[in-house]
Image 1: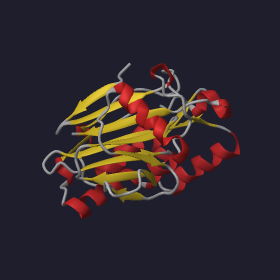
Image 2: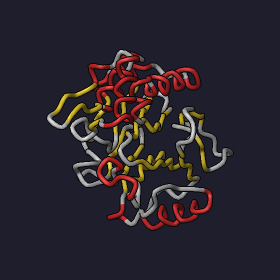
Image 3: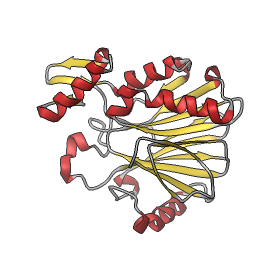
Length: 235
């Protein structure tokens, strides 16, 4: 099981779960100090710590003067010496790096973000803020649920399937014996390609949170006790 990945430009991506002692479903203002202590125990970059808490569909620009809790769906930046984190339990952490300028993006992509082009929005923010050229971007997709496990049932599933058809993304619906599954990976890579990124330069770590035993809402349901912590260290 891949837990750490070195990326170009001095970036390191790591994933942690209950086996590593990360025991929280969410990181909030009242347990942020616990996250910092966890960082210290694991030897994670001991400089400013930022964590993205999914609360709105917006990508912010990283600034060490920002509050440590960023209530959005992702960050773009060019600052160094920080560790950026997010928690998830089936959604995809996406890392994008401009290997020329050193600018970066770290984005939480759920089913809606995959279908609505969240990855492309991150690229556009990098272009706007840092002059990034899409052809200079490399990246990685962290642990997420695979299409075979992300089966849609009931009215909630029907709602998601409907959105995929509305956005013209029905080709990212995989038919299986268990039903229709949503392919987050394919949606993310397609969105990046539309933004000009060479998708072969974005590596999928190929870890399924559901069948590979990581924290998974699809597998554990409402009784889930912890989340997956993804950390991007920027040296």
